Image (cartoon, rainbow, N blue to C red):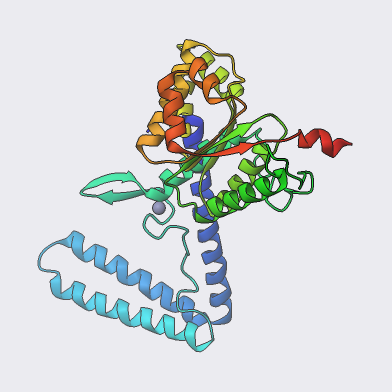
Length: 330
Ligand SMILES: [Zn+2]
């Protein structure tokens, strides 16, 4: 696992907040019950004294089996009485207990497995969430939805050479809605091709929005900015940022790379993009790639191998027509 120290401390902080929220609420409930039903408080004191007696008995050593058995029975009896007070007054039986977000680790972030302490899956999930949020901090994620995507700007007329842009776009919109609806973290990637201003970014962000709503981790990056960041950290020998970024780009549930082909092309960026792409394909993790390049341009800019893998592995959506952004301004 290669997350940065900052991501680890953010995740720990969130974990601690969860735990203390659950503990504080339980404490509040306990005080409420004690003030209303003093017997409940007396039972809690007797329960505490039972466990102290049990600990003392163990420390004294010898044959304490019988004594411990008696104490356990007494403790069960007290707990049952405590619960009976709560339920007879209309409270849930566990009203005074903390309700943790994760019952496996009680919001501590670690669990025991085969005699070893390991990270709880809930903590790994928090790490992933923090890392994705870090990359997305300045991205336009959450800004576009399917509802704000208007078909009105696409002409309905068709010519013998070009089908109606309206019809074509309606089909692509329906495809994207379906893709978002069925998203489960695995499966097909999408290649959106076409000139700037035809709705590629809007539709990919609309998919992202729905997928985020379903609780998946989405990362949106523009190719020029992420690749220049990766390249500069690659040559900064004092930084592990490249490794951390690549881990998140490869691990998130949906990766959206916008404007592929507009980055500064170098041997490094070509290799980096291919490796990220390949790593995700091997794990069957989906991507949405937006580009205004043709297949020929993809081949000549990157490599034939890269272009043919993209073409083979992705569903292709071709955006044709006039710049919608320019039309909206008029
Ligand atoms: Zn947990």
